[in-house]
Image (cartoon, rainbow, N blue to C red; front, side, top):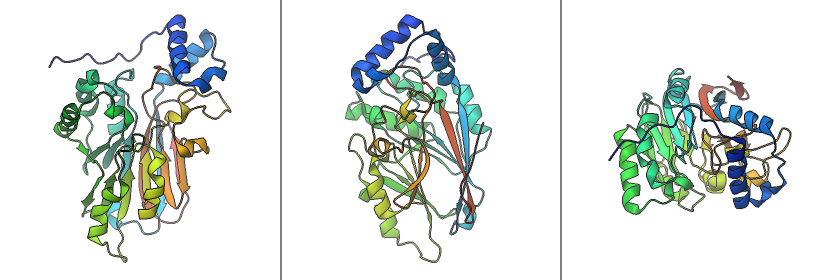
Amino acid sequence: MPKKSTPPLSQTISRRGFFRRVGGFIANHWLLASLPVAGTGVVGWAQHDTLKLKLHNWDLYYPTLPMALEGKTICQLSDLHLESLRISPKRIRQGVMDQKPDLLVITGDIISTRTDLDKLEPYLSGLTAPYGNYVVLGNNDYSHLSNTLLKRYLRQFESLGWTPLINEALFHPNLNLWVIGIDDPATAHDDVDLAYQNLVSAQPSPTNPPFRLALAHSTDCLDDVAKHGAELLLTGHTHGGQIRLPGMKPLITNTYLGDLGFYEGYHIINNVPLYINTGIGESMIPLRLNVPPEIAFFTLHKGNEPPRHRTR
């Protein structure tokens, strides 16, 4: 299969092209009809925000954290949308690998169409972590893929050193850590009971409880995750609204919690520490406004302190 070229770091979008794409976005999302997007200044602002990759670092504290996880760092990528991504593989690789994470995860929406199948290698092949790379699928990963091509897609991840988790969990005995992968809730592929089945069978010790890291594309599986419990649930899907005016909430989040005001960042809901990643790529139109792309890092500590956050 011929190799596809990697999207350039920056691509000029004309004012006419911008409004044509915004028009298509509005046509598919009627709520945006009230968004006053106009002028070349807004276009420039949006292009700047689209390419301004932010690194979010979180220190999270747990009274019962397994000793082996003290100081370990989890890196989360989400919503790469390689079909239109203009941030280069080199920038993403540098942003991730400079911090030397111990575990790497992607929470869905890596590609959208059959033509994107060959775009994985330049972005994912250079990303490694000593305790593994894990990926769950999102709604766009299922778009336009037959069952046969979906199998090819999953094999591609495996060949690049990534482990897809489709409603299943894997245990790291040296870390006393479960990584629980929940399939896409947005397309009703989620089966949280099945994803937790291995944990239920293992019957963990109450005196030395494992850390449960749950991964899902959307927060719409939270009720069932809360039933089983998790020390951290990492999600994406909302893009933080993708296009958002200062001081205003997103018009579109495509999640139940998003409608209630939880569409980005760290929260504790139903006793589950939850992070909603705004993602790296874009959907529908290749622009972000006031919601820059992000890579998130979570360093785990034993203690009772509140979470600490810094951005660069």
